[in-house]
Image (cartoon, rainbow, N blue to C red; front, side, top):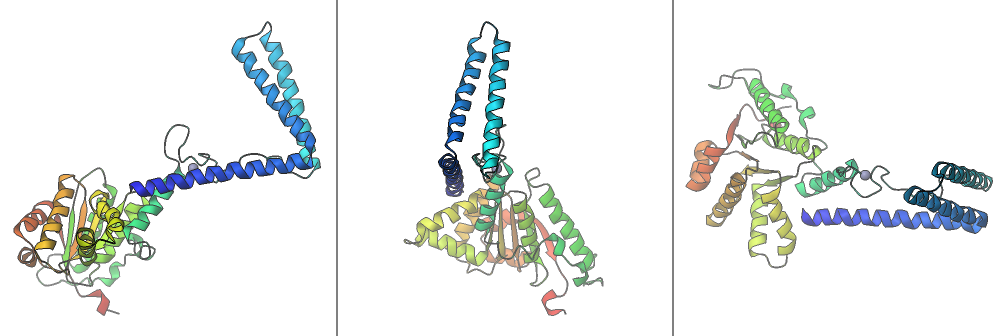
Length: 325
Ligand SMILES: [Zn+2]
């Protein structure tokens, strides 16, 4: 994220340089065409200087002196406006034109807060980093369709698949709503094709739009990244930022846990990642097709104890939606 912030700041510097350059170019265009305006601008600058000196150092009759100078200033400006119009220049032609007039392309408002344009940049960068940019336009909470879920009882479950999904969706929306206020980790489990990935995406989108950094990785992609970071030579520096974001992002989503090759290396790395985030109280969402029993069998005791101790398990059940038309 640090590199990203530096990139954004460089972009803002370029915008300001560009605005300044364009302003000088327009001003010179005016002066070339109407030299009289240059003389007036110089006179306006001198008058302004006199005014500020008066205010600073006092005067025998400051009020009258100020009134006189203000009168002179008004005349100069009128004359300038007349000449500008006569030569078909818009009145504000020589003024600075920033991409964002709110913050003059500094990214900060006069009160020190981040400008909304800067926040937007951060969100866009967060989207780029999230690995989700392309899918998120389609999958979000509002696109969720409960009618896909059966309203008939399912096996021994008390809730129908539809009511269960309503419950899970409400918990997920609560997770988004309380994000940053209440610390929580979710674990979605159940067979494929029941909306786990969809919900991961929807939560990611909602949080990215609120300005949080979210990293989404499939377990398979995660292991590839960890391997590249640990063993890769050439790709190491690119992998470094992505690696860092696994630990530092506001939310980490690991989808399809259990589909990766599980061995001592992956077990150690996954434990390190999950445990570090837990210690830092940084939320995670995991999804898996494995049952709780299979999770215990697949992962080391250390990993399993963190999952069972620190995550809220949500069970997705019903018929596979991808087979229903
Ligand atoms: Zn701005």
